[in-house]
Image 1 (cartoon, rainbow, N blue to C red):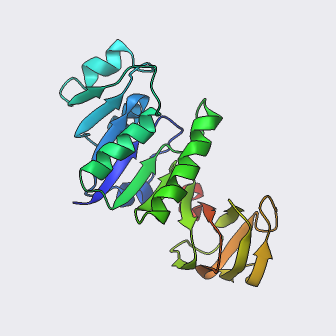
Image 2 (cartoon, one colour; image 1 turned 30 degrees about the vertical axis):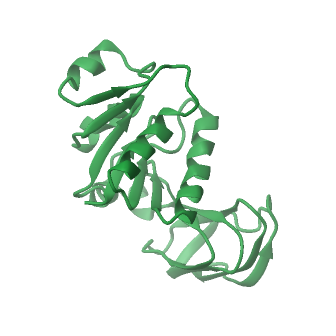
Length: 214
């Protein structure tokens, strides 16, 4: 199995869609991300990090999970350490669970940037909090399974050249989008959503309709 879920410390809502995305994955928990394991019905094969956000009750509840501990003063976040552990175990796809929100905006931003870096290196990534998802957009065509009415945005992480969106309420055709532009904020799925990019890097952030219908 080369599909891994990384449990991170950000916000999470357990949904049927998320359960399907996590079916059969191998799991690694990063520090306080272990708090999501029970809600998702998952048992990690490894629990790693510096454990500065873990209390005795959480340690006791997951005492059977193998632990790899690191010092608090280190050059990597707990999430990055967990991702490296998954890659060392042969991961080719990553689901970054709890990648949004939480108390640390800097960590959340790093998760977005890390997903782009990993995608450029050939590792597919999905970032999720259950009620929102993020998928890297790199040059080429990407197709999505979102229902009609799903709100989505394309967030440029560089200037974008040749961006086209089909299956959207407000389609685009071969557009230039400068870094920092709000042109591609708050669109809506109207059919089979496809994003095509000639040059640049971006994230597509979506809010699946199915979550709001629960």
